[in-house]
Image (cartoon, rainbow, N blue to C red):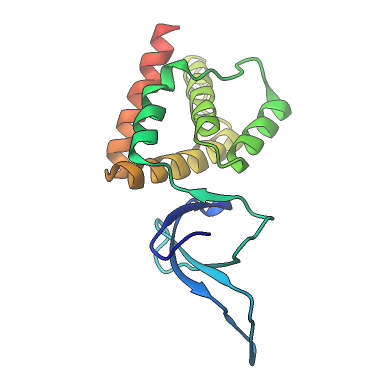
Length: 171
């Protein structure tokens, strides 16, 4: 069970702070079931209510500072499937994003960085689908690393992108 003040990853809401735990008022009756009240930290004024013990939506604690450093250091060693195309690749990205697994998010970023570079060389831009997955992955990964390392999103983005570029140049 999470505690008030914990930062967690909650489904497709990204990083959220647990601001309350308890029953919530439904219509004129009060439920005895416990709920987390979550505030997505990069969406001002937004709140999410989810039952404690919810099995339908994945949630986990934000990674620690040490885990974040290890993850960033491992970027060159994280491999992605460059052979997937079209619907297969889109399905894989969708599954990876929903997994709330930071290593899977790195795979998406690396694959899309590679795709973007190839398309730019041909005078093209990313497809709207790729742009959608890139944006979501960046928001969730950079948001989590920002909280874990107490750095701005911009600092995290620069650092992660530099690691991806280094790993691409090494290949």
